[in-house]
Image 1 (cartoon, rainbow, N blue to C red):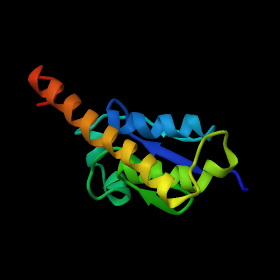
Image 2 (cartoon, helix red, strand yellow):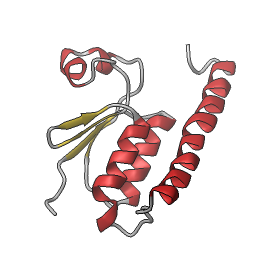
Image 3 (cartoon, rainbow, N blue to C red):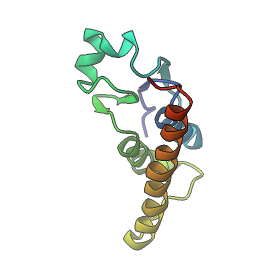
Length: 124
């Protein structure tokens, strides 16, 4: 397999962290452009062309651009998991169970994190 040409944009949120975690679990090299949500960097013309939603994270792998952390993580494991020392279910039933827990973490943990941040004036 060719060496991936991966770039990730974003930092400082659980959504970016889950992508960085997946990259590290898979042992993939990547370029990183760390900047926060709702910053000047997300409003630039270059970033807006890459991600019209102007949110983080964004990931570019070759010509492919993905901008939702759940989709990014699923893509990374599907594209690179077979060559890594990680468990990637081959059976659709096992994959569904893995997805169930991943989506639980995406939704439940992220929702609680945002609530805590908002209650403590960390997210205007």
